Image (cartoon, rainbow, N blue to C red; front, side, top):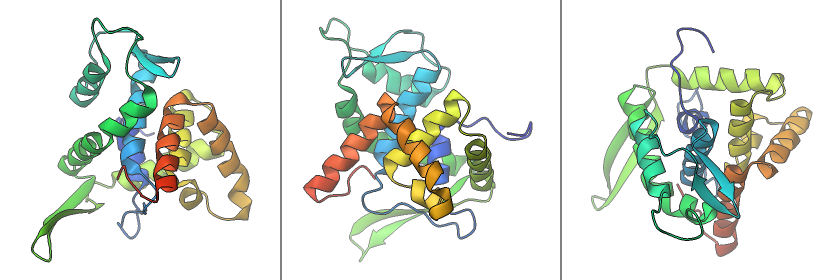
Length: 218
């Protein structure tokens, strides 16, 4: 990351990796489940900040001091259940329930920053839709460059490992690392996903939707 590059959170980095920096179009398809990925990335960011851990399949807040980021602070507040036994919510259930609202919130932030642009309308004049594409700020190209640099470095730091695990969990590792010669990179990302509890929750929700014949979470 250069000195001029903005400091992006894991949810922002993950969303930007889901857009082609050349065509400007989104890469995710049915089964990609970006919403689950954003929710998992929020948990990953809070974990990196020392705010949460997972115990017994539940998210537990270990530092109640709200993060400075308002979106992260709101998400952390939803994890706190004063007076409840058994700790916080189940990780997989929280990722599922929080996914849609979190995806919209983080993508709206990226639109405001110029990283994305959005076109809103109604399909056949009835069904509302939002169509996102790469914005003028150039942050998508930077995000892809950072990810490729981390890949070539073997995902050496905790943030890079968390992002790689989430990339695998939402199903775009083959897009970012295509071809037979990149198979070791995809295998490395899969190993990271299996070792990351937030990414595992994302993957479980994605697999549940696949088994049910749906493509929820985004």
